[in-house]
Image (cartoon, rainbow, N blue to C red; front, side, top):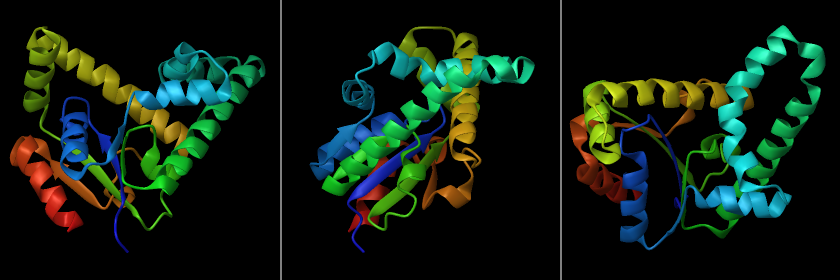
Amino acid sequence: MEKTIITIGREYGSGGREIGEKLAQRLGWKFYDRELIAEIADKTMMPETIIADTDEKLLRRNIFREIFPIFANDAQDQDKFIFDQQGKFIVELAEKGNCIIIGRRADYYLRDNPAALHLYFYADLDFRARRIAEAEHCSVEEAREKIAVTDKRRKTSYEYTTGRSWGDMHNYDRLICTSTLGIDKAVDEIVCLLQ
């Protein structure tokens, strides 16, 4: 079956978002990343900050749930509602086709969709730290700290909501090392893959 949907999972700093944007431009497809937060907030009639902060707060709530499980039900119900709505919205986007979806567990929500191509981008730590330091005007050491925090948040959120291992090769059709291949060559490879 022809692939008309691309989902992108990625390590922080590996270039997954940039690759997604370049692919969307080359293919003439829709690109969804942070725009998903606004759309989900609109559909659920919840503030964008709550939707955006759900992953971040999940780390703290998991610890809280372990210590005080009796008090955690409301937060858990809200998380589940947000993740369920997010999944429904991603499925709706996929039904329209010709789109690239960054993160938000799209590979999981579309795991049974034969039109979806699931990609995961990773890179060595030095490559990622240099990219983050340049983009965010910080030191390489600060970039390494940001990478550790962001990757931990992504891993915890992904594994908590899907029950699957984040970055596991069995969840994706292709894993691409951007520190070896480079951003532009990764885009070329994916375009060839779709033809």
